[in-house]
Image (cartoon, rainbow, N blue to C red; front, side):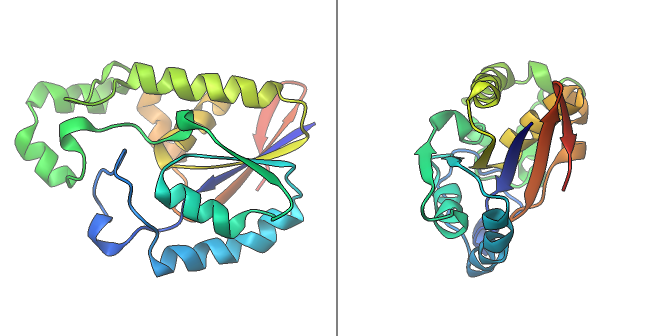
Length: 192
């Protein structure tokens, strides 16, 4: 049996909330740090052998709080959030004003075909997250923790649950949360 701890970074500062902040290197808020401190005991009780983390500040700050100090941690750039390009830092209402209707339709109806203007394609994002996930699953560790972002976690979880990209929003974990998955006979189950 393999166990993977999926940790979404804590809450960000107020000025970033509600905005699409993929590559933006936003810090945690004090509320976010408190959320992470609350997770620390739960994470330690699950005894991860290794931590993986996005290089973005909000994830690294989360790692610094939740990591079991004697555990090794690795920064992996494949765990960074998707790059929203020219939509980076905007609220959805602002994106709706500047985006072409066809772009919004693709984003809503066929996210797998989305290319963010001046940013990353969903296909490139999915490929890097999927490559990381395959390597993680094949690693000879019984329990590992991944500290990353909502988009990355949606991709990982929806893959394990067999959900298409159009439904990945159904599994978006809240900021400052821990989700535990276990694999038995090749089947991944959400256990807590």
